[in-house]
Amino acid sequence: MKKRLPPLNWLRSFEAAARHLSFTHASQELHITQAAMSQQIKGLESQLGTALFVRLPRGLQLTDAGAAYMPVVHDAIEKLSEVTEELFGQNRTKLLNIRINLVFFIHWLAPRLESFMAKYPEVNLKVTSNIWVNNRHGSNDCDIEVTYGNGQWPHLTAHRLTWDTLSPVCSKQYAERLPSDISSETLLKEKLLHVIGYEDGWGHWFASMGLPYAEFQQGSQYDTLVNALEVAINHGGIALGRSSLVKRYVGEGKLVRLFETDVTTREAFYLVRSNSRALHPHAQLFIDWILLEVERDSSNNDYRDLYN
Image (tube, rainbow, N blue to C red; front, side, top):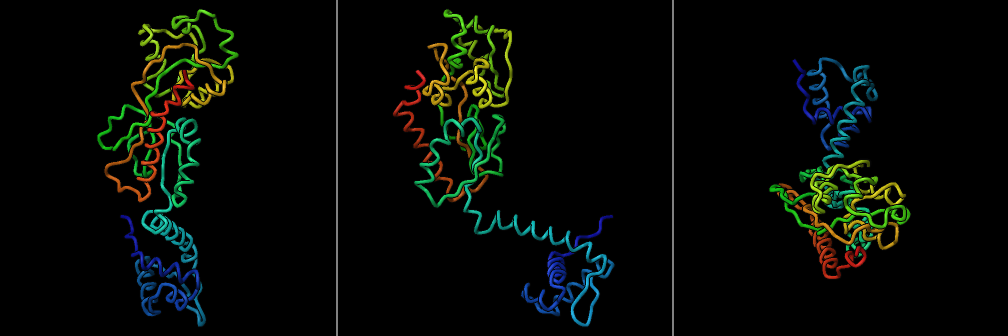
């Protein structure tokens, strides 16, 4: 049978007394009387069945049991204090915790983020990466999230951010090695870079081009589109580019399109938040800002100008 956990106030009194080696100083720190401090320590020793202190004429000395118990109790109280402050203290509102799909962050959000920070200098962000595209459930460890999928999540409030088209892309050097009359069928013989987790992958593209049962002859798989695009830039194969994410690379000449035909995606990037989690005080500022950026993209049509 497990030993019953002592009351927290007893443990706090023990930890303070062990640090100060004085009931007087410990009681002053915890704002209780010395008599109450002494009573709590006696109660703790009685429950544990062992002495924790040697009472000396001037001060205290830890017994072997007390010395062994002290660091464990100290670490537990420190951890509890840190978590309580992080979740419920005044510092909680200082960080807006955003989890973002890695490829979206690198190719879409990062180049724009400075404008948000300049507009709202009072908002401090904590940005973490959501590498896996199917890691989306409105987790309670973030305030808002940018993720990829079909947008059908009943427990989440979702705002669509992208309306992408798909097109094969590769480096100019790789394209120069390809046949001048390359077609979707002959593309099956090339080194295709597949990204795990996307429903709108090569299979969707080939089906849209009239090859619903395409059999790939060679290629490699990657866990993020970031990796696949980097391999394509370095002449390692052909990636399936999403218009909003490769516009910079196409504009800079690092990647070129192989076909004029665009295939519309069935999935998209979404900004989501949990319906069961209280909205962070600064979350609406970020939501409004990013939706305005999306609206500007739509009105300027800038990514299509670069991509086409």
